[in-house]
Length: 135
Image 1 (cartoon, rainbow, N blue to C red):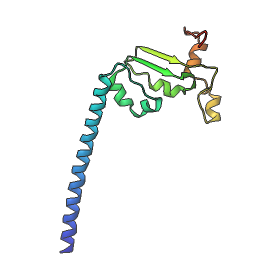
Image 2: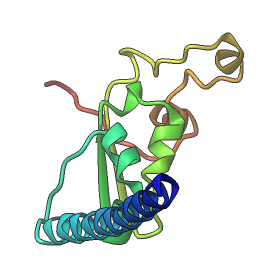
Image 3: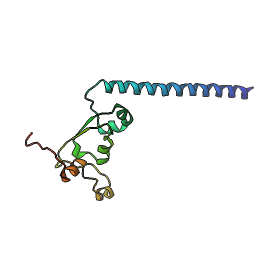
Image 4: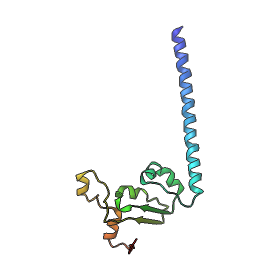
């Protein structure tokens, strides 16, 4: 008798768990749809590079045409490249390469020159850029 009750309790639990999983997935889909509506309703949206990394799929569906990265000289190349969605037409980097370099916590990666930002690499490659004469 106890065995039958245990099996039935387990079945009820598994059904409830499956239902909860479905509700959770639907809730996630609705949350993503709302976030996409918010993005589409705005002309300018600000986020950190880490925020972009967390929401990369959402940003990719949003299809930004302009990306502006502030303090770009301090950003690791990998985080900058992650912002380069196929929809981007204008990529603007703001920063001072004479300030702090990107934080690299590995001598191996530093030897591979990853402590040089994309901004500095482009400037050294003679890609046209503008600098402020004064602030």
